[in-house]
Amino acid sequence: MDVSKKGDRGMRVSTLALCAALVAVLVIGCAVTNNGVAAEEAAVAEESGATEMAEKQFPVQLTDEQWRSILTEEQFQVTRQGGTECAFTGALWDDHREGFYHCICCGNPLFSSEAKFESGTGWPSYFQPVGEDRVYEKTDRSHGMVRTEVLCNRCGAHLGHVFRDGPQPTGLRFCINSVALQWKPEMTEPSEDAGALEKLEAGEAEQQ
Ligand SMILES: [Zn+2]
Image 1 (cartoon, rainbow, N blue to C red):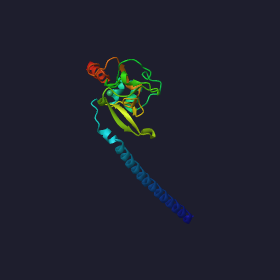
Image 2 (cartoon, rainbow, N blue to C red; image 1 turned 135 degrees about the horizontal axis):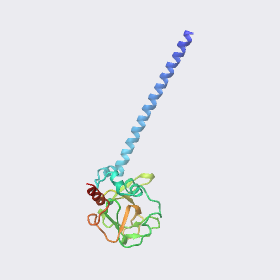
Image 3 (cartoon, rainbow, N blue to C red; image 1 turned 180 degrees about the vertical axis):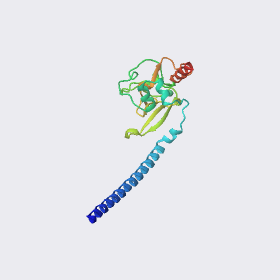
Image 4 (cartoon, rainbow, N blue to C red; image 1 turned 90 degrees about the vertical axis):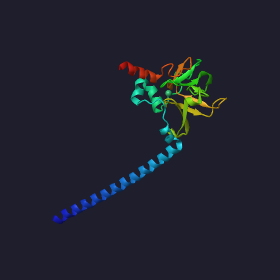
């Protein structure tokens, strides 16, 4: 009886030791894999300009909570989280008014109706912004594609992407989410005609 008990214990001990060894190998294996992936991601980020992006400081800086307080859920998802509205669903893809399209977040004037054209994509499309310094372009490697993301150069709002299949004179197609834009008959600087940021500041001043 004693011998058999010792044998059982011996078996249990060696099984435990084997399990511990296996766990150790798995943990070490995972750690190595994770480090490898992290290094790879860092290399891709550096190559894609994401490091440069991290250093880019837009003049308008709000917390997610502040943005949520002045944007609708859809506006927040698209502009602050890089979302995309469904084609042919936005308010501006089929808009033919003369005027200017401003950033929904900060009121920065971005595009003119004079540069708007029929792209057939279901998103408002422009061949140029109202000024090169109005937008900020950044390489976007998400969804297995390499695209150029277009951001508002004042607040960093995600607007859409720019492609090189547009009409003359630029050959560019700025494919922009309607929900990221606000149409106004005139081009107004944010200080002249309050953008969302000014509305937030005004609201906070009222509360004080
Ligand atoms: Zn903006």
